[in-house]
Amino acid sequence: MKCTDDPGYKGEVYVLDGSGNVGMMSYIPGEIVVCCDLSNPSTFQINSNFLAGWKVKQGDAEVFGRDGLITVKTAGMSGTITLEYAPWYLKYVFLAYSLGIILTVAFFVKQRKDAKKSEQEVFPQHHNSGKL
Image 1 (spheres, rainbow, N blue to C red):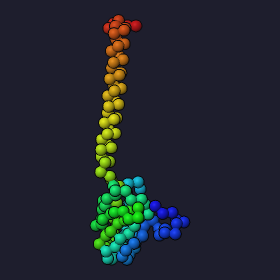
Image 2 (cartoon, rainbow, N blue to C red):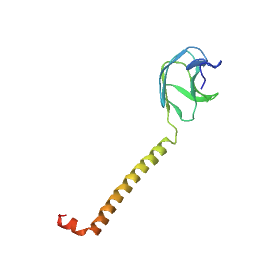
Image 3 (tube, rainbow, N blue to C red):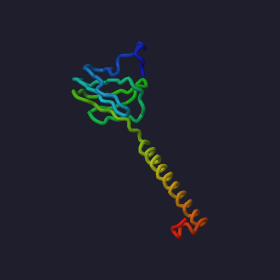
Image 4 (cartoon, rainbow, N blue to C red):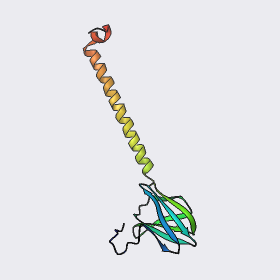
């Protein structure tokens, strides 16, 4: 990522090779939408760190890293390209997280049942008669 005071800063999105215009429409965590008006094959770069999980969600393009930044190559188009950050391991992290929650809930349910059971063993008359 380049800062605005860096001499190599060219904007948040800019054309590297080819001609035309590109502009950032939205940038939210995990998704970037770029508006393109590129009449011939072009490559543009987004001023954000490239990680291997970036994929093209919408549009005819290829995404890769160059100089540590997100770089997009297209055959030329007018419209939007949507990039999505979805690394291969994300579904496994979600699965492990969900399993952890399920096991934690099961543990507390079992603890509560065991506590009630031991309470019934210590004070059997309170639970059988309905009177204190």
